[in-house]
Each structure stands twice: as C-alpha cells, then as structure tokens.
Length: 135
Image 1: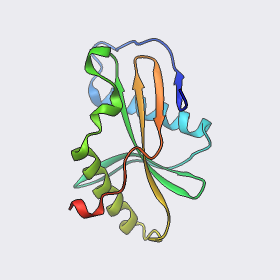
Image 2: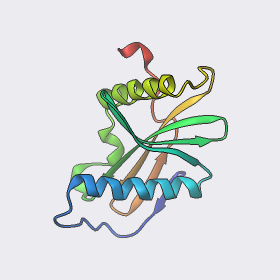
Image 3: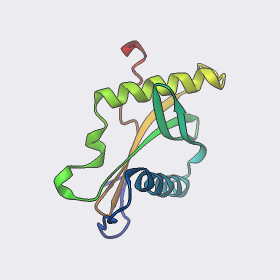
C-alpha cells in the first residue's frame, strides 16, 4: 500500500506513560517525514484549544500532522481515532497557528495523519479537509 512501510515489531512498552510514548512516536514521525522529503517547522504546537503534533512543509504545502499509534490490534488503527471532533480541534489549532505567525492566507495547507499500527507506519496525505466553518 502506498504511504505504508514496516517499522518493526509490535512492542508495547510496559509502564511507559502516554506522554512519553506520544513523544517517542512524534519523534519517529518526524524522522519518517524527513525521509519522505518533508521539512519539519514546528513540533507540538499548543494553544488553548488544540495541540498540533507536527507542522511541516512539503513542496508548496504547509502540512499539519496528527500522529496516532496503536500497539495492539484490538484497539483498531491509529488513524481511526482522528474523528470529526479531533479534526475540528486540529483545524482550530491550525487557524490559530496561521494567524499567530502571520502566514499568508493564500498558502495552501493540508492535514495529514501518520498512523503507527503494530509495526507499520502509514502516512495519509490530505486525511481530512479544512473545516473553518465548524466554529
């Protein structure tokens, strides 16, 4: 499948809290994106309404990336956790980012998801549309 590759065994780490695990997968995602030709411009952008895991450039696009991981198959795929509510929060955070850094409103943006699922990484480009009218 395009955008999917193997990263190793499905090995949950006992006793590792979610924040540490999240940071680990965000680091892996950044490395993966660099290998795919992206340039990382921001890691863990936070505002009161949202957190955006990674902001990157790919060609003409400014890309907002959500990173999700699942260590067991019983929990479903990581990308499935990016539901409409999560998408709306990410869009709000992206709009805040654009305004805060005075980014040209004509710059094309995109929302991607990187899903780590039991040893497989999947990059889903253009995973969902910008939903400015949701708030």
